[in-house]
Length: 193
Image (tube, rainbow, N blue to C red):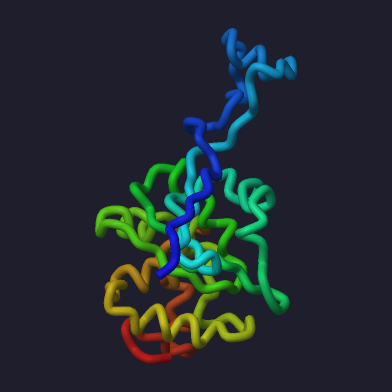
C-alpha cells in the first residue's frame, strides 16, 4: 500500500489572493509585488495513495492554473491521459465546482458528492450546455451517454436534465418546435443507447 501524498493546489478564499478588486493593506502589498506576501489561488487539494492516480478535493475556478503548476497532475500518455481520476466535492458553491468545466475534454473521472450537491450540478444549465449530447457525432459520445444513462447513481430525471433540459432552459428552446426532432431521434431516458 502506498503512502498518502497531498498537494495544496490553492489555499485562498473565493476569488484568490489578492482579490481582483481589493486594495486593503495586505492586498496592496501583493499588488505591489512585496516579497512578504505571495499570490495564492482558491482552495483546492490533490491527494494520491500511489503517486499515479489523483483525487481532487473540490475543483476551484483556478484549476487549470493549479494543474499547470503541479507536474504530478500533468497529462501522462497518449493525446489525452490525465492522472486525475476523481473529484470529491464538499459542496456546490461556485468556488468548489467551477473547475469542473475545465475537466470536460474527453477524459473520464468520477465525481463524489452528497445527493444535494449532485442535484445542484444536475440543475445547473452550465453543466448541460457543453455535455456531449445523444445526437452529437463527437467520437465515443454514444458510449458516454450510455454510461451516464446506465449509472445507478444518476437518476433518469438527472440524466434528462444533463442531456436535454438544462440546454433547453439555457438557450430558451421552444420545446414544441423540438418535439418532432426528439421523436425522430428517439432518445429515451434510462435506455441503453
